Length: 428
Image (cartoon, rainbow, N blue to C red; front, side, top):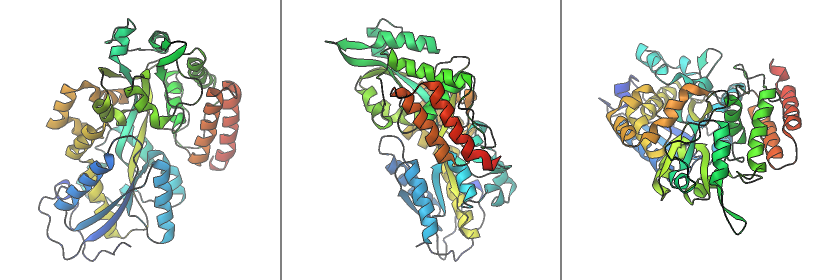
């Protein structure tokens, strides 16, 4: 169980957060932090190393960082800890959990913790596109950490084999469908390599949000109390995704989020849509020349942002809140954000992170590292509403019903919209 602070922490400026001039404390503030990992690779070691660096530079704060599974697991464990009387003080949770956490009165706004001009400026130092899921009701509730957009990975060797230009990945839906057909490779009637795979388990609503946005639609309003699942352009987007499976460019049925990266690096698909958070793992594992591109357009380019934000819980003392904010400032400082981005593929969360020498050099030597950042200007907030888990499930069920052949897009999405309307009516 965490100890209560015995010593007030002095100052929370960036220099202090990075350890400059930190005084030896009479006793430490203890923090517990849950965090999720939703992609492959030994990322727990990276997080643990960053936390160790923080404690070395800030000996007056002790942090117990606990890997909690995926995003849903992390939310459940963090909220269960709050109710058990052994709360965490801060956690990395889904950026789209904001409405649920506010509704449960579980978190405190950063605006209510910051006090100095430097701290207030820090709140405005992140990419605005990554802050969309962290702000509501005029306040900032979440600080971006492991954030992403969806990108398209493609096998350049497979492109060459199929007679396609490896320097020209598909720029629009028509090109992706046409190239995908050419990239399908069969042997004895069996498919050895699919043209493209888009995961439909794990976070199907996230992938679908990209299709919808590319077709000119968003799926929810900024107040989190209205969805647009049954609009004609949204139905058209799901119809396109369905057609990729019907025409044999993509496997029919479910495509697993968790194993898709392995399918790609094993050459079982020539293209895949996935989070940029898998970039470093793909770079390490792929034995072929690969490229990374923005997702193809229909009416426009587009991808939702995704990933996790830092939150500070309400069941905290003022000293714990200040200590938690020092930790969060450290973990999201430009130098650390650059380190995290290189180790994982997640985006640097601020423009300043891409101005660090180390990330500038990395992106110059490895241009795929900048694709997610460059795509951010075409991005939108990830699907987030009140009752977000139930609303998201309604949409996920609709998508999977269509992709497995159980329902047609218009009927499935009308049903999902009806469920969302019933859930969100009290919030309008």
